[in-house]
Length: 365
Image (cartoon, rainbow, N blue to C red; front, side, top):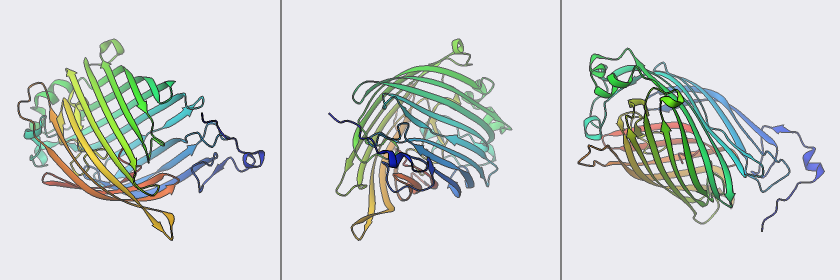
């Protein structure tokens, strides 16, 4: 049985918050402010500012995981304004975990329709244009039943509204049906097994999660539907620390009257990088991805630099789908570690007649 090891009183007398730390075991609050350029295919060139705060809720326990609260504000060359945050906070000796995902985005965008074959080769033009306003407030709370086994509650509020749409976009069945019903609220159950050493940047461990979230007017929302997800990830340390084989497979199934803003989107900065975020849209999706992360060592000492390569494939579908089409994907990337196990991410991905370059933070999964 493992017991926490407490640092001595001299360690606790060090400054409470610092801007640099050499070890992930350092219990102090670590703040990294940043102003950096960025890029994604749908947003164009961005200027982003914010901060990455990591800390231990029990500063004296060197075995505990670091909580983190990243915040980012961006303005892009297409006129988009974006805010996001993905906090993870460990409480009560990691028996209680809070995870959040918060977004606000207003931007000129493109709506290609629903279905894989109908949208994969459609050109981005005035005929696909509209202005999208989207926000998401998602909170997940987990309680550990026994080692690595968790049950959780999912609370989700989201809003998607399109304005200034082209005549072609207005004629789309899903857009015209749901655009005036933009607000959704959901409550769901989550079951999880998680043995990862560090969720934000895993070197080893296995992750399995099933969730089912129900949306409806009984929670104040405009639409009645259900989203079911199965997410499987496995991480293998290959040789020296930081050299990792990472595998993910995910299935997301929408049931009922799923609005266009809540349909599954394949080809995001977090899965098949290289496709335009929003091009591939349908009620359900599935994908798998294999990624190799290679930390560089100089003079037998781990550096702050890593190289990455990945390959993956995904598909979109609904109840009416008769033929399943494949979206292939592969790419290369670079990581620069700015906090222990926290990195700036540069990725270049290729897909079917498409490509994309990304500058962001943390691993895709």
